[in-house]
Image 1: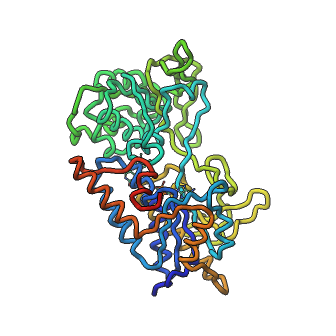
Image 2: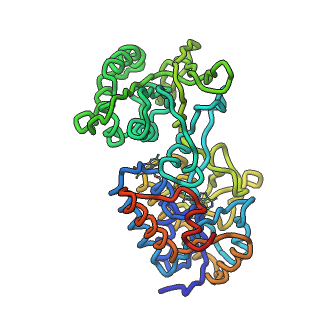
Image 3: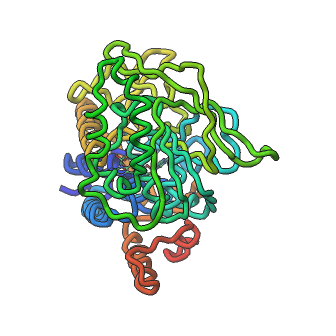
Length: 445
Ligand SMILES: Cc1cc2nc3c(=O)[nH]c(=O)nc-3n(C[C@H](O)[C@H](O)[C@H](O)COP(=O)(O)OP(=O)(O)OC[C@H]3O[C@@H](n4cnc5c(N)ncnc54)[C@H](O)[C@@H]3O)c2cc1C
């Protein structure tokens, strides 16, 4: 049954969590308005997953297109919801929406607040990932890389960024700086396939020799960690050029070292750690001993932070999650609470990387979106009567607020134009790097 354009639920963010939530809500018969900051849907599936994973990306794009075909879903791209833009969350309730599900992802970068973080050559992985995946406005940045790059972090994003550096730059040496030991690395075997051939075996052996005793002290067996780090070696992609990857374990950045003019990075001071067991968890404990590592760039791949732009209560790097959800799904909370009153905020729900920053792959975000849709459905089932807004009226109201709306009928136009550009340039894929170009093609500039 279609809603004939009558919308009851607003979903903010059309990444995997928002799209699959919209699909689930539409399947329950609700009319869904799906607001998205970016012109194109997909979030990190479009602008995060490594560009050459085209089979995965195209598969997801096809799923997203099918979802958007639902007559119960209205797509509103190029709409940045926040307290400072053309649309605020509260306005959605004023316009008649009964529930708002927020799935904006974790768009902020985490900072360790170290001296030197503002130096030229310091980069946050998220910005770089958006740059090489051509998300405006990051796509227009101009990153310069020197010969040697230190990446702080030991997860999949470190692996992806290393992949970018060996494939698309002339960087010769990459050092992954990891706070804990070889047994605590967080990357998956699959993500190491493109870069494991670049591992400098001698440096790796020396580094393992340096940290093995520390591992044994807490009962870890170095051989197991070596096998796990090298698990991708037998399926490694061949090296395409001369470059080296190495690891520096048990090391936390203390400061980024400037050149003489205090403008550029020339290195990073690392404090050495030991491993300690605390409540069954392996933790890093600073030893007070420091070493300097020379490098031309420092890339932080240490996770992301939820932005505080919607005017809703935050707790540390995320939204303030309701401790006693009224609509728990599988024992999890998809609601937020006001820390002052301790009350859950009525009608607002959260899912995906916004609920758990930098956690899990697309499949996890999908599940989260579907669960959140279930919670929204239970909340709405309690209401005696549902209000709503007609889709044409909604688009008119957005335009009255000064928003430039990209509706779903325009997405194929953009797709076709990008295909034409790709064919012309003999590329597998082409993306416009500014919103202005895209809006112009859509006749909206
Ligand atoms: C570098 C990297 C590589 C990855 N590689 C893989 C991989 O190979 N395979 C895999 O399965 N997973 C991968 N992932 C993980 C996957 O991308 C995430 O699990 C998933 O995208 C999270 O979905 P989400 O919808 O919660 O958030 P996001 O994907 O971040 O989507 C958020 C959406 O919200 C919109 N938005 C943000 N703020 C606002 C606002 N204020 N108003 C309106 N809209 C807003 C954005 O435009 C975006 O469309 C990778 C992640 C990263 C960072």
